[in-house]
Length: 428
Ligand SMILES: Cc1ncc(COP(=O)(O)O)c(C=O)c1O
Image (cartoon, rainbow, N blue to C red; front, side, top):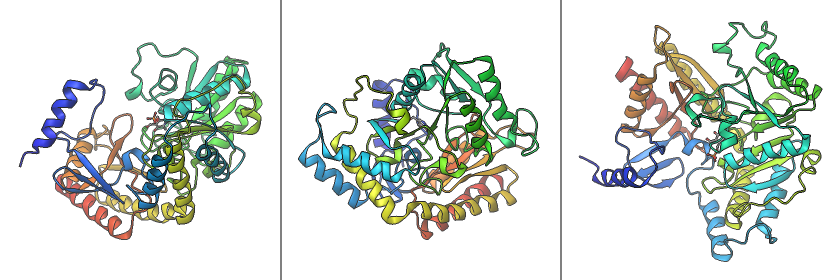
């Protein structure tokens, strides 16, 4: 039966949205309601959400405790802006300082990941007095002028004239090494490239920005010693390390933050997405030493907004109480097993990778071409069968799983059955 409601919404979209706003699915449904790990469309169909709105609803959709915190605050005070003191923002800053391991303790709140990264890059300039940045070739850091500028991933580099003060180093993708070397014999040739960039641009580079695990770039986990080597290279030249924890933060990878996997201390981390579990909030969080360099006036109209801050406080409480990083480790292991079992049966899956509940299965044809059309077939079939998964990677051929971290055994088993059925239908 045709979904006439979805057809009407598509007409509005085509007429009133700027065409750059694209959607998944040939015939997209209209999502109306969320509960736990599930989403419901306007026809009443239920879907197991395996993408969490790109790593946002880590605590599940509309958890009653978190929703209560939002509603209570919305009924009391919704907005003042940062020129006035409000308790939720300050309590959140305190809670975040306790939640983040290590030395990043000073927050500046804003409303999105792009804004958080933009602010972090500005802070790095102020703290070092330099103007250039180094970023990775497959990274995504946002859609504002500068954050799109430090985004190496071609799919998201829309501006024909990006900023000139950005240098790119190759992403540490061992399965597709640009130097055709193997880790560890490679001696981290990709990290050495950062050293060469610094040598060629003495005294110019303020910061190196990176995701602990590339999200949109196709769930790329750098080798375990990569960031330690990078940190040592940066330290020789006084260059700051910014970790973009937009997708990896808040227990997603089985630790509270992605940087913890590598035994390093960033100078600034940026957070957003799962901090609000669906409400718009972001922040850059710096060490005392770096933060104290930002004394010129800074403000964000909605940064630390009481409703978002009260919600985020409740999110942090929920994560602590439920020990979500442990859940993500256990569930993540099971989900990875599911993907690896499929990989043994279907040669289309070239590699399974990821940490915790941030997982990808790269689909490649026998002739070595990225299997983007096959990825789309799976995406459509899984949706028809009630599963919403993601796709990432420069060639859009990495089947991506980032479900709510609260997923239970019933959902894991159902996803296993759904994935197997979809692969068998098309490639069995
Ligand atoms: C790693 C990373 N950084 C930054 C952003 C930008 O965040 P926002 O869309 O909230 O501006 C994203 C968004 O997908 C992201 O994945």
